[in-house]
Length: 501
Image (cartoon, rainbow, N blue to C red; front, side, top):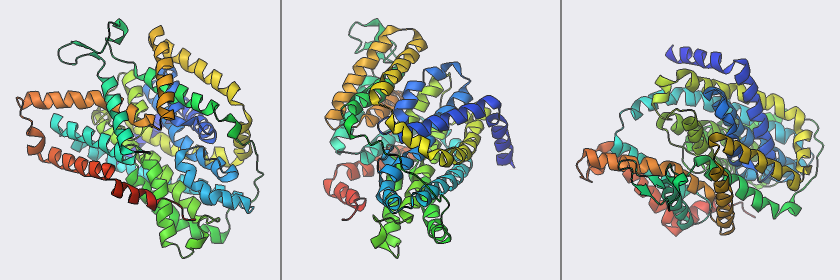
């Protein structure tokens, strides 16, 4: 009964006119950036974060969340129609989805992706509503030692799941943690790494880092490759799958939903891992494995279900522990802080309307995505005709204005340029910016809880091993580190998700 009462509160909040409107705006923008390769939800949320400062907190978070899970949906549209995944998690969808489109079956491919996404999103949101409150109650029992171990686990798991070498991911996390230490010491007030610049005494602005690393850097990278864009619009007919198609997608949707719901809580790239794992599972258990890569509808329904389920459950660690499981979730932490709310287990009790309103809005958003996307497929693909030289200057202009409006400080705009150039150089060196952002967000939390635990224990470092929960988390973190750094294990893990010729 308590759950039903809480959901009633959530829907009474989510169904307010302004919240429904901004939920619609969020999923609309999310679909658009999912369709357009190279922009993505992280850059979009980073650049819209300053604008949401004037919104009510629940309205801002509903819109930003809609952008995130809307982008997971939009990425599959161009992956199927023109073999151009808008999102990294949609890359595996293109293997069979585009083959179906070439066979004249784009409609069933898009419909199975939409149906799978809707069912997975709905079930995963139920899982979020059921699992979050008890997890938050457990989190309230955590002390500084447990939080330190948990944050350390999150950072190490993000290394294990990052693309590229573990050494580069580790370097990015270290750089992010280092940037997070800039400013005054949290206990003594001593300036650190400010180099005589008074603007740095309060630390580096989170929005400037996010907009620069994910917005400007991605734009610079994509301007190099504009000639590779495809502006083909495919005509889509006969959207509804046949009876045989419907029979074949039931199992993959349910299995993909379960995998995505479980893997979505992992830091770093749970939604990408979920979609590739689902594809590998479906191919392995299929009676027709030879069809995979040649238009198997299971290869579309399973990964898309896993991807969208993971997008919903990635909110669990954010809302219950205050820990981001994805770069967009790290930006959501920034959104909470901008509105004066500390993300974590206290949100449920201190801001129940916000917590349950956000969850209820995900059901509304999933319905809007189905109603919005299938009838407008042609429009989404035509967006690929917009030249980058027209689109990107407008994006940078609005992002700069929004960042400046937060603190009316020109230094923040200069920081966008600096971090944009830094991000571009890192991308060219094969380094992923996402671990850097996670390190930047979690680094101060790691330091604060480390020092608090040592102060409480009077300098006894064994406190991290003598407290059972902390010891278990450290053991899991060590195991994740072994998986990340041992080349043989890593190579075997990557081979599982490699498509056979």
